[in-house]
Image (cartoon, rainbow, N blue to C red):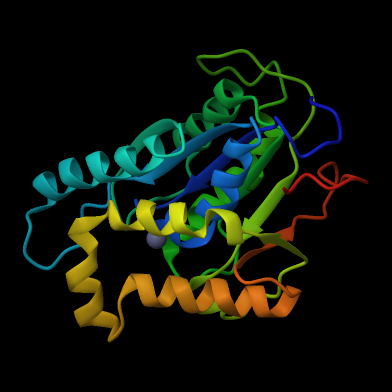
Length: 241
Ligand SMILES: [Zn+2]
């Protein structure tokens, strides 16, 4: 475990789909990276349902490349878990896979979806990370990599359009917003069809959310988080940058 500074920490961000990271926490991850931290990004599903016309297998290949390219812009370590988009469920094997991810990453803190997010895969990832972040500490729970002691603190990132989510902590991402925007642009397969579906571009939605959270905490751009407060994840010091 690193000291109490938010510099040079190991941060593990786990999202359900390629592009969730960029929308919700890329500014914060970029800030960690700038400060010498180690950023580890994991995408749980293959994103194969995220288009109207591109076939699933081809789309999964495209989206993996897009997500990896985005992660590389901040020097992030990249993990592609490859579960089927829209059908992520918590069973023994899946929970163990998530526990092993945490054992490999050895994070000082974890960022993931809010348990009350709108999407079933988002909620599944949230639950899996909550459960795995405890069992990964138990040596008798066997996975490919050995257990480490101490459950890691969890922070939930914002929901789409901030609905039903009140941050308990904010990160000023004014200095890294441009990087966040560039990372989102890597997801070229998503930009057009989402615009048709939602009536706005992802870039616009991201901009409005970042300005809105920024307004709430007195800066230009911000990302909001909610600390998980159950035993033994609570810390007396700030881990967000
Ligand atoms: Zn998603």
